[in-house]
Amino acid sequence: MVRFASGVLNRSIGCNESKRFAAPDRTGWGVGHNRHVVSSLRPSSQEVIDLLFSAIRHQATEGKIRAAAVCYDARVVPPGSSEKVDAICVELEHPSEGCAKVFLPYRKSRLRPIKYGDLFGVELSPRVFTMSGPG
Image (cartoon, rainbow, N blue to C red; front, side, top):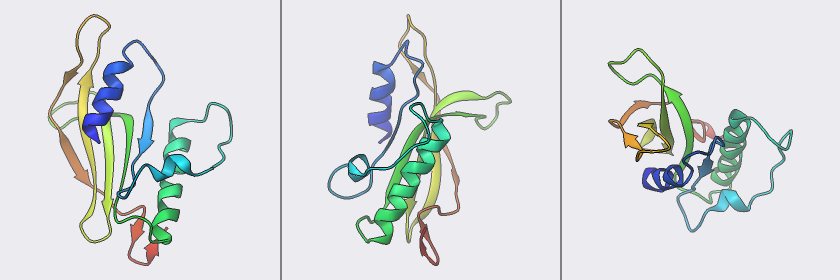
């Protein structure tokens, strides 16, 4: 998923629009086929992320997925730094293996290739597969 996100990022140099997508762990990109409503024609990034998690949670409740990942553009303070930087963020979740948020910092310029930093991550509480069931 990070490789796919890097490719999207490489193709969007000079574009200010953030990219967000999700990939349930089964056959295909099921979230993309669900119909969900957003509050406006240009919803906030957080609204889209919440909507993706809601769709994935619904699929988990129905037993259609075994794991989930949501990828989005983020701002984060890497370990050993004091300033926020742009990063590809992937939230990974599995019912028995746990949850993590993984960041790949990057710096982009119109005239130079994207430069990637060191990958790092943190553990998360579940948003999809919870102890009492999904959701």
